Image (cartoon, rainbow, N blue to C red):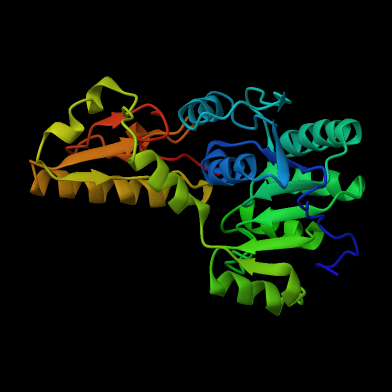
Length: 291
């Protein structure tokens, strides 16, 4: 038997009806990492993927779905201005549970460690539908870093049936938590598949300021800094470091995509320093956003 539960993930066989696999995600990083899996499921005669989004992110999720050519069959559209972790969890749990009760897929796939992952895995458990956890086994052993992701992924481990670990280290983490070794498969990280897919295509960067980025030989520094635990003094320290780098290397182009949080780059960079040009959230090929 797989995992901590007796329900096995069914596998379709030639001559049988393909198994319906519902892939559920809610944020832009999840979309990036499930896209290669969705493509593989679509290409297989054994499976029929059913794509459902909670829309924990809204505009950012829509951006990457468009780039990666994903059209969800179901959209719960739970995003609300000023949403909290509690409100995301309760709306996602209720919406996914109702969807699963109606659709009855053969298995549910969740990716990573967002609040959508925890809520969808719990809803699938309630409906006695096997859960496949993609990118399982990441750990920091600090429940508040990253927050709430570390706890989300630990809880997903307790709810899952099959674990797709990106590395041998992730597999070891799962085995240390008494997950059945037969339920763990080291797959690599699907973000690499997404990177290879996008790099092989002509995609713009989604912002006029970056239109000539590939036409110049100037060095480029891509910066991402958005974690909740980095807000405040740590983020200001990042800003000071970037200002020093930009001043010391005037030919360097610093690309700093901003996510729509209350910690913008203006608050990151010290007002009296030379600060790299910042931009509002760009389309996904430029950079990813928080999970």
